[in-house]
Length: 483
Image 1 (tube, rainbow, N blue to C red):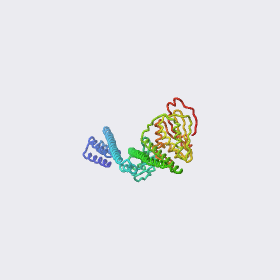
Image 2 (image 1 turned 90 degrees about the vertical axis):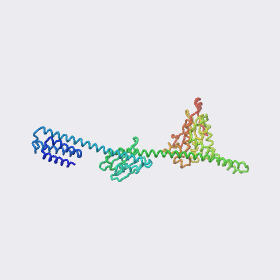
Image 3 (image 1 turned 45 degrees about the horizontal axis):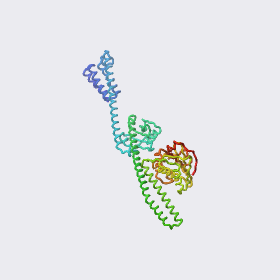
Image 4 (image 1 turned 60 degrees about the vertical axis):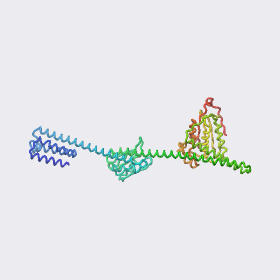
């Protein structure tokens, strides 16, 4: 196009010279050529054509002709004005053309981003991961390769063929938390950030104008990832809730189904006893059947109660209760059960009255004693301690020979949670401690793991508020008794 401008100036000069066009008439004609050149060429070539036009005007149309000397000062001013005008027009036209080009590029970029967003939204949330997430980026923007690193899963995925180690650069960008562009290899890497937290990194190879395009692409990728994570968490929460409903229903159904055969066993054992013709060994076996059936019945009742309390809000019927009597009765009950454990009761202070629902507290304490028996070694000691401190009565249940890993200590009261060690020792539902804590909280108290005694084994403490009347009369004299 520059050569055409030079040819146009030459042709115009030849035609005007043959027609004997004067200087005043030639100037606008040359200016028209310069404007046309500016519309299609670069500023540099337009400036060259403008300078050539001034030279032709001076040489062929300004007296004396065929020289570059100017006889009249006004002609010199006219030539200078022509040159300045042509250069200004050239500059303005070039700027307008550049802005129009940038605007077209921006419109094209916005259109591509819009189409990319449509593609990402069309992908099902659970499938918008890995290559399925990257394919729209490579397809819409025509990159040679696209790579993404997910910090949560540690997965590194790429589509396309990289020539400049794009996966390694993408991973390093996350660990260094640093964005970067390498013009030589056409690699651009950006960190994925959500809520001020770096969640991964994304790399592009062969992306046009990355300084303007990479930012919006990263925002779309981060939004798509968060959409997938939110969908996954919602699905997991819904599945977990449904599973818990089924588990509670199964526990309730099993507890009910056990009642009838247990009642039949007890009735049959009683009938055998009433025959009166049993030998001593047979009577002993009958006693064993009755006691074990009764124990299984109690366990079934507790299981049923636990399953119901799991689904209900615990509303205790508070009455003034003697804590020592309640705890010692439960201890005696376990001492009469053949558990191969040594159960002892230590009272570290005088009698204390509490405001409690005795039935619910028995259930909570029984759960603690059951756990102590399950997760301790045969012939080991299980210690139950009661102590009044201020406006609370503490009951601690300790066992040795087992421990709770530190990573699990904060989760043992979660619904249905059972640690690896617990699953190794025995089966269970994972509801016992959860319901026991619900009972404690319903009484205005607390049930927790005694971290201060963790080196001695496992100790749980149950704290229940003392009755107001007893607090008004003051604490009685402390004593220490072992039963």
